[in-house]
Length: 302
Image (tube, rainbow, N blue to C red):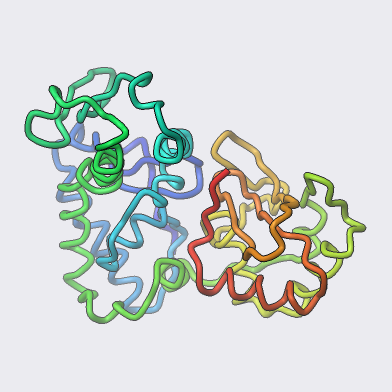
């Protein structure tokens, strides 16, 4: 099936042209909540009848379907620049005063702005080093959940009409994506031909040769997990890996060298970037790569 999640209908919005989530400004369409409930039923019916849809959502939206808590890391799939600003604030002392923030956000709806308090009296509470963790928690919750609360409730009411939450409670967000959209067909030669290497890696680096040898042994499910881990979605563009999209436009799959050999591989899905330590053995690479794609969320912090 082909579910056209078209932003022109104002029901959904996309940051990268690939993954979608409800549009906080969907109210421009008078019947938006009824439509969203209908879309939720369509997705639920597709799962029930084991029919795949040509639709891919943000990781945070899959988490909402599962009833899984959503946090700061999920912002990377919605607004990568804003996510990085918040991470910088948390990791550095003394920057809050320079930013002159308070406990409010400014919402934009078709050219109009409105100020929303994140807590009672928030407009009068400056963000400081002492309260910045609370601010980041509240603003992350607003951007991932509260800003689309009524849209989420409408979609989920339709979705859960056919798929009770307990029936999918054993899945994680990546598995739910595959349940809805199916396994893609991955052309390994196309993938390799459209991969770039940075920070000292080349196609001839031993670690890179080991990497592709391992991926060559993977089945389609493991290749899909790797693709999800790095790009944030299982979707392969119609034009193949050459047409892979990142937050700022065309962005090829990128394997980036990092020095911490004790760490697991991490990923920056907004850049389609795999941060891969230069391990000493193929066996170590095999274990750590599979551990990363099966058990972690993938997000690294630059």
